[in-house]
Amino acid sequence: MTGKEKIIIKEYDPKWQSLFDEESAVLMDAIGHYVADIQHIGSTAVPGLAAKPVIDILVGLRRLLDAQDCILPIEGMEYEYVPEFEDEFPERRYFRKTTNGKRTHQIHMVEINTDFWKRHLAFRDHLRTHPEAVNEYAALKKALAKQFENDRKGYTNAKANFIENVLAMYAR
Image (cartoon, rainbow, N blue to C red):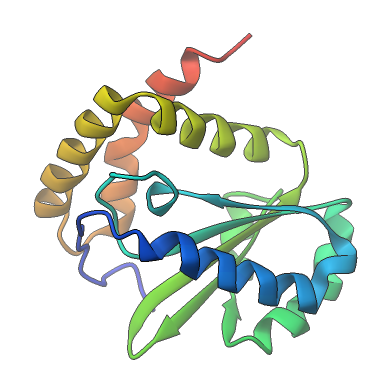
């Protein structure tokens, strides 16, 4: 998969939660002895929010060093490990799963309770409790998907101000 795949935003699908539940159970079977917690993050984790239909899974490890021992078992679950993304986020290990040419799942593996962990959960939890923010974010995402139709990085970067403004409410 490249950054050139078309960005498609779909209306919320309640199946997204069960897809997360199923995948997290398989992950726990494969690497559970390293895992402190697994969370559903991203837009598919927010009831009512339109999203790219990709299940984002946040795996919190007790020690990031243990990620090395998780790569082969996760690759055995048909995920691709993408180490080059560690240049931008050295505290994260990233995996993606593609089915029939479409990305279906992403794993963001970090040490539990790091800034990456806390920020992603804070953003998700804010959206889950603020319907007006869900509506605003959905409208933004739909507009940006049209503007950056085949530019995933541009789309992601264009959402950054909204996300940072939400997270600023929770900064100490």
